[in-house]
Length: 469
Ligand SMILES: Nc1ncnc2c1ncn2[C@@H]1O[C@H](COP(=O)(O)OP(=O)(O)OP(=O)(O)O)[C@@H](O)[C@H]1O
Ligand SMILES: [Mg+2]
Image (cartoon, rainbow, N blue to C red):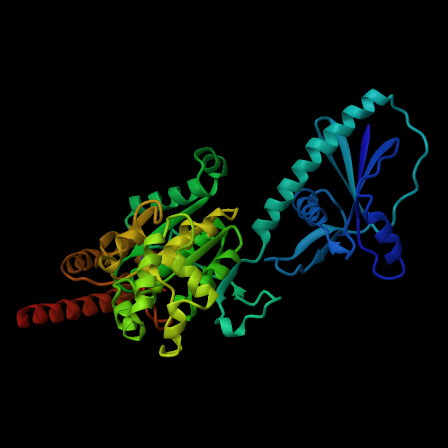
């Protein structure tokens, strides 16, 4: 028995009407082959079919080794050239002992009019193909498409530039950061722990379903400036093959805008809020200031609203903001434009509520230089599942950097560096800066000596400062 799977391309001009007619009839059978046709365009509006796209990816990955004539295409949104079968080229695959030919055709071949096979036999093959094989092709094809896609770095636009019917909330550029875990200076065991945690998460669909939790994970990265927080996020995105949404909270006007932004994020993405302590009012100070503008009745209303705040739903306070009747509206006239009115409770509700109910895996990451400033509520386990400290450069970290920047694993000067690192607090960013070759003729000796000089002067300065104090 043969299965003849067709891969029907869109005919650009005169045959448009013809193509349209076939699109409704996605699966057709005929003998001695069972023939299944997938059209490139489907539906009333002739949209590009997802199945077609998945099959194209599947075949590009599985069959390019066997197909003799290939067509190279630069496909929008893909990292590299995509090789697909040329028109009328055929490739064969075997599945549970059934031979399947795939061919990419612009025209449907003539239908033979008779069958060699008894009906029962036919049914078995048909089921194997339509139930198992096509499922596998579509699933694999989708996974391959995700792997091959060009990844994106999104940043949120200020809401003044949002249009109602267009997706203008986020702008994106291609995400191409070379960071990876190998080149990240950090204690080896901690690095492994983070990597394993991420991989476990990304493969945990069934697990999360089983325990009845949304497929999300939160990380808090904290540490002094230049210790690799942003670099680690890029390495995480590269490891998981996720997009990045870099959320700038200071340009988000209020909680309802924040919710709209988060709802628009796609699955397989990392949402980051950098310097969380600077982007949101954590201390309540701003609230106190604002109270100047509130009437006493408004203050009472606000108090009441706060009480009503539940964990799952959105708070009353938030709703008021949305309606435009809330006290936040009153304040807006007195606020400078740049200040954001996203509140801590709003952020927490959104993290716990609506957005976590949307399907698909997402990672949310907060970074801060001052972990001690953060509100307990923001970082409690369950919201931020894992807290990762990135710290000053130690000898182990230095060795990673020396390998990255100078391609050396040992050197007589290493011991001097070790001694200096033990008594000086220096960020990996500073060490990297000293180690970087600034001219072609600079070799490892020159760079290491520069690092030693820099460390010595830093340590001398620190000594002076502590004396003064
Ligand atoms: N742990 C590290 N491993 C490797 N390189 C690092 C590390 N930390 C810093 N660097 C280097 O220093 C530069 C700055 O680091 P990065 O931006 O990741 O720091 P950060 O912790 O995000 O700082 P900030 O708190 O100021 O945002 C990076 O481009 C990288 O080259
Ligand atoms: Mg950073």
